[in-house]
Image (cartoon, rainbow, N blue to C red; front, side):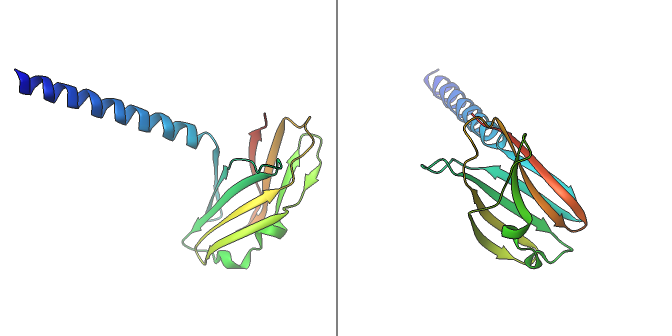
Length: 137
């Protein structure tokens, strides 16, 4: 009987642990947007803001057919707000090359009244614009 109780308690613990892990995954994925086209998949995750309010995004590009090293993310990435104001990156930290590339892209914080932004990556693999939207708090 005691062994059965121990197994039951262990099962409950593992179920709770899996549930907590799943809920954390759901929170993290709500900040990630994905766009596929032209043989390239782009995933953009909004990261925590800098203490000065700058917005940071993790951009991951994956492909099996395009050389991603030819694209300068500082030149082809912008941030746009609902009023059509355009912000250029203040910093880009690149990692990887070839078919798998990632970068942390930083933008100055738009006006406090800005409620929504779009990160736009232009002209990769024949796709004119890849647009990723977030609400700001």
